[in-house]
Length: 368
Image 1 (cartoon, rainbow, N blue to C red):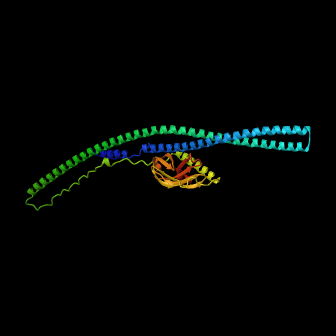
Image 2 (cartoon, rainbow, N blue to C red):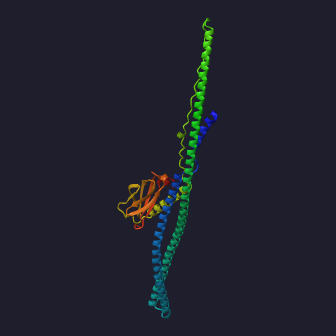
Image 3 (cartoon, rainbow, N blue to C red):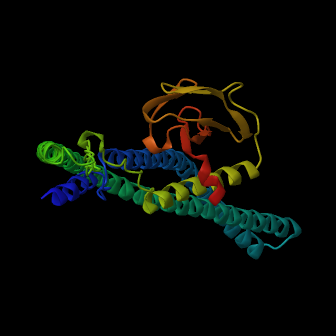
């Protein structure tokens, strides 16, 4: 019975320390924050596309009006050319020939103008079609984001229920281990008491026998008495169940899907930035001094890159927060696992009245 108790205690306590494979509420909340950050990035991308579409609507209206005006010029040039041909045919002369040549030249220029303006309208329409397709893709991704955020809230609730159940099981096992320890101590104490009583009885018996022998052999030389060796006391083994705590779960690695999404977003924005800056053109900064600050961020100054693009790298703090750049404010989420990480912030001020904020972990750049 004692042997089984000694095996039971370590078994119960070690079962409390076994790592649990299920995700913890903290890990699930971190995934939720990453989903929210991805949705914020896509929302910013949608705003940028809408800004471009808004600009192209005005460009298309101007281009169509210009094409219509040029079409009217072409009609006039055709009438003038037909009239000049008729005049030259009826009464050929140097003046009529010169007038015909001039009318035909104006006709060719008008036709070229119509072709040029038609191509411009087609380019704008093609660009609009591409932007509309990109917009549809982003809107579909946003719908997916909303669905997985909703599902993630359910996962968090489930993880919290599982954590509560594990805590109840841990408390139950601790109580069971404590009860087993108490019983084992009682049995060990009772056994030690019995052994002490047996030892005292054996010593008393030996003493009586020695005294009787001493009386019997009083006239004989005293013989060496048999000595009794003391028995070794039993050392009590006490196992404290309250000292056994579950192992701390190491955070699960980031989801591959989220890594790919974040990397694709960073790559697209860096390529956009490099292409825009490489185009050159107006390199004068709209803002002489532009700073980044927030409810959980220190103040950092942006670097002007050209083409109204600004960048700053700074350390971030986890949680939902308000980021302020100039007079513009942006609500953003930093996942708990990114707490203390360095982030890249890009302020796209191509349209100063409707700027865009791009942000991602700087460590992603090493994969580009």
